[in-house]
Amino acid sequence: MAKDKGKDKTPGRKLVAQHKKARHDYHILDTYECGLVLTGTEVKSLRQGRASLVDGFVQIDGNEAWLHNVHIPEYAQGTWTNHAARRKRKLLMHRYEIDKLESKSKETGHTIVPLALYFKDGRAKVEIALAKGKKEFDKRQTLREQQDRREADRAVSAARRRQRA
Image (cartoon, rainbow, N blue to C red; front, side, top):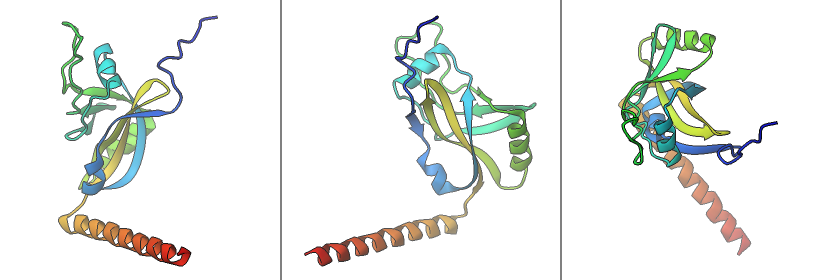
């Protein structure tokens, strides 16, 4: 019976990178969790917590999903086997998910964006979303709603503090 190293396979989710502005710029319609095909130096660089999803997008070519423009910097201790920082990476998804994403993304205004890059039980995963771009007034409306919600929460907590005193 082989012994499990256990060192890298801590249960749970260890976040590496997050694209916070995606939720501001897009209406998120549906989310998917995908595996990634990575080289060894990419995994080592991710384990150091270094990645950027800002310019990333997903494109479907020939029944395969590819992640483009995600920046995973070169591994510092890597040699000639180091990877290119912005190469396209294959996503591991079920065929029915790829077909569904392909048909939906062909609609006007829809795109597929990465939301988060993380390790789940020792394996690199990326959370992608089918999204529709927001107009400028939608962004302002969302910010206004968040601000109103914050003010209401502050008022409620202030009223509770006055009741206790």
